[in-house]
Structure formats: C-alpha cells, structure tokens
Image (cartoon, rainbow, N blue to C red):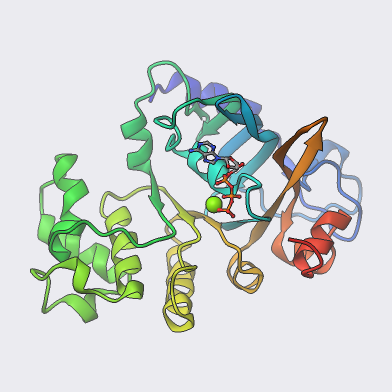
Length: 302
Ligand SMILES: Nc1ncnc2c1ncn2[C@@H]1O[C@H](COP(=O)(O)OP(=O)(O)OP(=O)(O)O)[C@@H](O)[C@H]1O
Ligand SMILES: [Mg+2]
C-alpha cells in the first residue's frame, strides 16, 4: 500500500479524549478533545487502526449497512453486537475486503487502515488480507494435515524461511501446540470443533497479521471450547487488534474493551443496519445512552 496515503490519513484522525459520566456526542461515544471540557480524563489517546467514515453497503441495490463511522483502536478487543441481519458480518468483511467477490456488492464511504484507504486505487486485496486476518463462525480447516493447514498461507506468500518454527509458534500462540505436537502430520479434520477453531486462529496468525477479525468464532462450539477461545483472545490482545462479532452478550461483556451496537433502522420502506452506539463495553452494558442499546443488551429486543 502506498505510503503517501499513510500520512494523509493520519492527519485527519481526530484527537479524542474519553469522558466519564456525561452524555457523549455522536454514535461513536468519543468527543473531540477541544470540546471535551474540564471533566475530560487524561485517557491515553490510542492509535486508530481503522478509521471508518460514512460506510454504506448494498447488495444488488438493497442496502445492508448505512452511514457507519467509527474508529477501531490499536491493541483493544472491539466487539460488534446486534440482532441478526443488522450487518455485523458485512461490516467485518468490509474491513479486509472479503466482500469484494460478492455479486452486486457496492460500498460508499471510506475505510482507512493505518491511514491507507483500503479501497483505494491500486491497493491489492491480497495484501490487505495478509495484514488483516479473518476467522469464521464455522471452523473451516483445509482437508490437509494440521501442519499443512498452518503452513499453507506462509507457503503461498513465499514466507518459507524457518517454516517449522513459524508453524510451532502459531500453534503455541493459539494454545493448541501441546494437544497436537505429536500428530502434526494427521488430518486437521480429525480435531474436535474447538481444536479446529484454534487451528483456524493459528492459521490466521501464521502470516503475522496486525489485526484479527473474528465472526462469531465460538458460536458453533460447546461452552468449554468457547471458554478456551475467549481465554485465547485475552492472551492475544497484547499482540493483535481484535474485532469480534458475537451474539453472546456475556462473551462481549467479558472480553471486549469496546463494544459497537448495530441495529436495523428503517428509512421509508428500506431497512438497513446502522451503528447505534459505540463505547467502552462497561458503558454499553451498564449505562447505555440509547434506549435501543439498553433494550438489546437486557434482552428485551432481538
Ligand atoms: N452475499 C450476500 N448477498 C446478498 N445479500 C447479503 C449477502 N450477505 C449479506 N446480505 C444481506 O445483508 C444484510 C446484512 O447481513 P449480515 O450477514 O451482514 O448480517 P449479520 O448481522 O451478520 O447477521 P447474523 O447475525 O444473522 O449473522 C442482510 O439483509 C443479508 O441478507
Ligand atoms: Mg453474521
């Protein structure tokens, strides 16, 4: 990606401070520092990994998401919650251009990653996905050995030096090494669901991305396997910026630093997903500013 857009993008990221106990402007819950007043805390200003502005998406002309603006900050776990069909997966997939091949997909607005326009002319989607890895709802190991699953992307990207070390490192980081070190040559399809999902996380990490996007990674797992994925995400957040879609409110409350609540809004006859509220997770769950958020997190809706 081009470096000139880096400086251009960085320049437009607003400086923000986080307020406590006062109403916040805008859906993103962050107030420009110059307007934040005397009660502003000296909260650290984190770097925005993603700066998303007025993102709208349609499939075959039907709107799926409208007017989403938010910053996703470095080194945090950001949860995306909301009722089915409100565009959570669509949003996540816009961050690493996973929707590109979907027929009839159109996008307006901008997604900046470290200041680079992800959809800018000349940006290579493969390079985007190298930096921004993704894990899906259903574990999807390749019908290959455990080793080859993890080695697959590095081999394709010509990252073949010290491959064995890389595979071991990724499996250790995914808390799977001890369980599979004696069966690396065996089929990945023989692993349990929870192990397969950790293998998919290891596979995503093998090419050392900067961001991990996870779309309901634990929803197909039993509570024990789900808990081990949560534990794993806790350990990974020091190295990665993580964005996770989840339907599980307790999971979001337990693991996420920030939470974005999306919902469906009507405009005439059309209904499309929109960002209702984005804030520290604790605020979203204990002091939501928008009644729609309160209704959702307390189970009255959705
Ligand atoms: N590939 C696609 N082609 C056409 N429409 C799509 C496609 N993917 C999603 N949509 C539509 O976009 C809207 C948002 O879908 P999306 O899958 O992003 O929602 P979601 O919030 O992830 O839902 P869920 O919680 O059920 O996973 C829906 O109306 C859906 O039908
Ligand atoms: Mg989804």
